[in-house]
Structure formats: structure tokens, C-alpha cells
Amino acid sequence: MAALQEYKCPCCDGAISFDIESQRMKCPYCGTEFDVETLKAYDEELKKAGQNNVSWNSLSGAEWYPGEEDGLRIYLCNTCGGEIVADENTAATSCPFCGNPVVMMGQFRGDLKPDYVIPFKVSKEAAVEALKKHYIGKKLLPKAFKDQNHIDEVKGLYVPFWLFDSDLDAHIQYKATKLRHWRDSSYRYTETSYFSAVREGSVDFRKVPVDGSSKIPDELMESIEPYDFSEAVDFQTAYLSGYFADKYDIGHDNCIARANERTKKSAEEAFASTVTGYASVSAENTSINLLKGSTKYALYPVWFLNTTWNGTQYSFAMNGQTGKFVGDLPLDKGAYTKWLLGIAAAAGIVVFAIQYLFWML
Amino acid sequence: MKKRLISVFLALFFVFCFSLPFFADEYGDYQAADDSDLFPSSYPGRLYDGADLLTSSEESSILAKLNEVSEQYKADFAIVTVNTVGSYSANAFIEEFFDRFPYGSGDMENGGVMLLISMQDRDCCIISDGTVGDTIGDYEIDVILDYIVSDLSAGYYSSAFDKFISKSEYYVNGALNGFPFNFAPAIVISVIIGFIVSLISVSSMKRKLKTVNPVNEANNYLRDGSLILSRANDMFLYATVSRTARSSSSSSSRSRSGGGSRHVGGRKF
Image (cartoon, rainbow over all chains, first blue to last red):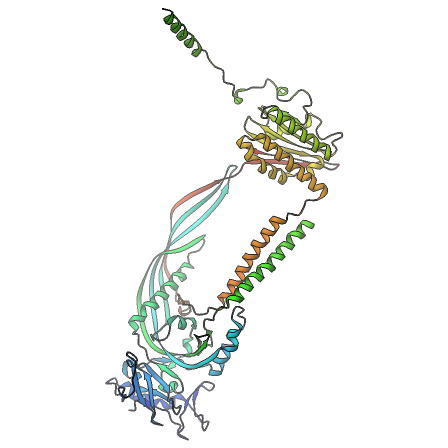
């Protein structure tokens, strides 16, 4: 089986890729559309776990800085023979010479095969539009940023996620208080009653995602959540054609800690809502047991946009399914000061006028 | 021989002295034979220092001020100090005192305001009557008492009385001629509130710039309806009581037909 898979149109032999609008495979040359199912046959080989038969070469010829050559692989494009240099985790990319989309089948062999994928639902144009919309309403964004900010790169990448299902058994002890006020002629009294509220029960979580790629910042991925798992389909490599993809490089054992942190917090909050009638409630002791759990591996779609302004790189990400757009923007210190003083002055004048009016009456 | 006689004589003298009982004159033990002992027999003027809290020079200077202000506003500004109010409450005593003598009547058409200091239980109270009573109500009485109570507690009676006169005059003058607009506190308040409002708005604008944040919960992934509570137990542990002292004060007020009202308010000092 070929190390690199390129999907060819049965009609015109052009390279076909996954089309977002129709949610099917589409040939950009002759316009023919195919269901992704029809290309299932290509994935049959993947079921066989075994030696990763990849014909990648170790680097030769060119000089690399120390460390740079670790984790790099070279593939040969089937169409034009050009060298495709890729990360050891890259699972789908495009040939830099002829532009054909390629999928590195070896990255999905055996255990590495994802269980699910959510195909891209929002287009590249939508991503660029969303970036422009992201600037709107940000009064403290430097004006020059909007004008001078150049998009270096817009990349549609399938990010590897570990999805954790868990049925949890929880035993949580809360500390709660009740207050009572009264007064007599000489004093004001406050009585604080302390309670211990114990809640036991079970709660289930489904498909809690944790980023399985060390290259992609976890915070960024958490910010574009949530993903709607109901739109996930069984994995087929054909979906990746036309986009980039990475396979995981952090094992699920290392990701489960984060999932546990998040589900524990949610369990505490969920059970806290059953502790009612108190002035304050806080969790003191939480003990969570996993009754049943399962782990799945999925690829979720993300649009990445990288821009540079004033020598600093800014990264933006958009959820490829829901369109949620995030990315930190720089602060215009001058505008900050101007707004601070301006509003202070305006509010101050209003307050002064109100006081004067009161005096007049 | 002579020295011995002198020392024996001195010793006997001291023994005699120390064996004499002393009578302590505490305010609490003073018993009035009847009501009339508490009050002066005739109109005592605008300053009656029954408890002798002022020196004679202080007395004359304060009396002069009282007379001057009273003539100016056609209202009786008066100060009374006593050692005891007998079985009266301080508020009742000052009312009785005010009514017994012609305060706030005749020439003094605008009524009057009187301060009473009773050393018996360390009470201070103020009565305002007539048109002045309309101006100096329960709230203003509280303000005046707030203003003078620390001086009274410390024993600076002359200073407290000066403050009473100036504050009461301020209110009466304000009612007649309008209070001046206080620029300084108004500006300070405007600046402070202005900055608070500004900080809040600008912080919210700044927060909009940061959209990348970790999500520390998994509420979106909680399966609906999967929360099953198997045991709920609320147990009382213990209770604590805390208290803060209230400033004790009492007041009463009523209005009179034909204009004018009376207000009485007092507290401990």
C-alpha cells in the first residue's frame, strides 16, 4: 500500500478533496461529487496492524541545524515527484510543488487509526471573514493592527483529540452556612450556623475532549469548545484530503488527568446545585470514583490563522464545526489611557451636575 | 521631753482625723426634695450653667454669642447644664425646662433651640421648637449631636457649646437664605465616582481582547439527566454569634397647628 495516498477522480484523474459545502468529495477540475463512503476501500489496508511500511528517507544532502532534523520526514509526491518535508506527526498535507493534497496512510495504521472525525463544516472564506469580524467592537485594539495585520497563513487542520467517556461515582462533602440577623436596643446580632452537607450519587460525562498534540496549545483548543459530537462520523482518510492533519503524540494516559480535573469540577458544581437553602456553599472534600470509562481517538476540525504585526506573531483559531473564533489581540496603551481619562471626566461631570441639580431643588 | 509630747499630740490628732467619717457627694446620691429643686426659680436667661462646667469668662463669651444669634434670627438659642434631672428622662426634662420659661415666645417669634447637658447619667439632648423646629428636625439634631459628642466626652464643654451654636445657626441660616453649594466635597465625590465608573468600563473593554482561556469544567459534556442523587444528608455542626454595638439615641417629634413643629433628640456622651 502506498505510504502517501492521493485521492484521484475516477472521471478525470484530478486530485479530489473534501468539499465543505456539499460535505462530499468533490473534484475541482470536472466538478463531479462522490460520497466519502465510496472511497472506503482505500482504508481497508489500515485495519492491519503491523510494521509501519513507510518509504520515507532519512535526510541527506542539505545541512540542518542541530535538533532541526529530529522528527522530520521526507515523502515523495506521487504526482510530481517533489520532496514533501513533514513533521513525524503530520498525517495529511499538500505537496508544496504541485499543490496536490496527500494523506500519509502510515500515520493511521492499527492503533493509530482514529475512531471518529468531525468533517469541516465552515469554509476557509468564513474563517478569514471571522477574523475581520473578530476585530469589530474591540475599542482598545490599535487601529494600525486592523489595517496592517497581514495573514501569513490560513490552515485547515484536523487536530487529534482524546475523547473520554466516564460514569462517575461521587461523594462530596460541602460546608454550608445560614445567617440570622436581629437587633435589640444596644446591639446588632448576627448568628452564623455551620452545616456539613453530604451528597452522594452518580453522574455521567460523554466525549470530554483533550488535545493530544503537544504542538497545539491546549488553552487555544479549550477556548474553541464545545464540539457537537452528534455530527461526528466514522473515520475515513478521505475526509482529510485537502486539509492538514496531525496524529497524536501525547498518549491518552497523559491526557486523562486533564479530563479528570474538568469532570471533577463539573461534578462538584452539579451536586452543589442540590444543596439549597443556604447563604453559602463550598466543596470541602471530593472523592470521585470511575465506574465505567472509555477512551476514543478523534480528529476535530480547526482553522488556524497566523498573522504578524510589529514583529509579534498572533495566532487565531476557529472551530471548524461551529465557527467559534478566538485569539488574543494586542492592547493599545495610548487608547487605554485616553478612554480611562475620558470616561472618568465624563462620568465625573455627570455626577457633579447631578449634585448641583439636587442642591438647586 | 518636749519632742515626745509633740509627737504624741500629733499622733492623737491624726488618729482623730482619720476616724472622722467623710461624706462623699456623688451625683447619684443627691436626692431632690421635690421637682422644683431641679429647676431655677425664675427665667435664667439663655445660658444656665447649673452643673458649673464653664469658667466665668467662658460663660460670658458663650452667653454673648447666644444673645447675638438669638437677636439676629428672632429665635432663642439656649444652653442648659444640670447635675441632675431627678426622676425625669433627659428628653422630658428639656421639654419641661423649655416650656416652664418663656423660650421661643414673644419677640422670639421663630421659636428656639436648646441644648441640655445632664451630668447625672451623662445625657445630652436638644429640643427645637416653632419655625426653627421645622428647620432643625430629627436628622439635623442627630447631626449636631454627632458634631459635639466627642468634645463633650472629653470634657471640652466650651468648645462643644461653640460648635452647637455654629451648627444650629448654619441650619437656621440655611433655611432662611439657602445653603451654599459645597464645591470641595462635590468635586471629590465626582472624581472618585468618575474613576470607578471609568475603571469598570475600560476593564471590560480590555477583557474583550483576551479570548483564549482554559476551560476548567466539562459542563457541556455532562450527559443530560445522568445526575442521580443517591444520598443527601445535611448536618448541623455549630453556630457562632457576633454583635456590634449600636449608638443608643432616642428622639421624638410632633407638629403643631398654626405652623412650627417640635423635635427632641438625645444620647449619652
